Image (cartoon, rainbow, N blue to C red; front, side, top):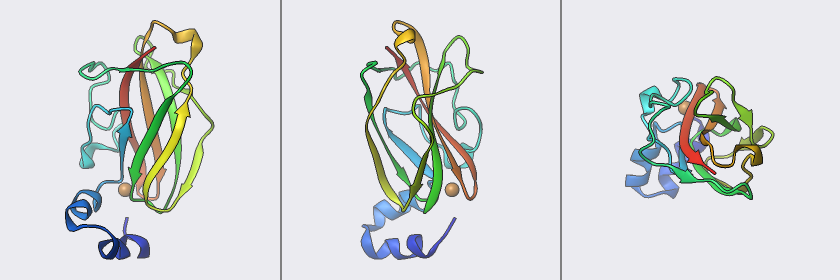
Length: 143
Ligand SMILES: [Cu+2]
């Protein structure tokens, strides 16, 4: 979705960055995601990736793990959720939904894990409700 702010971004950011950003919706940077495909990011629950893929697994301490992402939507709501790998229909909120405004990088210093899940395989999902739809990125985790 284009807005006055995204229209102004070329003035502020290097061209290579803009090329990556212009159609990006949002991109999870940390924890490492399974990947990003712009045209499939609206596919639940993993933005077009296989929820059982364990090619990158992040050790997710109960005490918390830093999240950051890049968003191109000037206003949206983010949900930070997790599901056990053996029950991927049941997503739990790690924190209450976050209303975000402005484009660029957005950071949460430490999102806590779920103590009852220590030793279990899980999937962390960041879900963005944006003006152009609901978008998904996931990161395999264990704690
Ligand atoms: Cu978008």
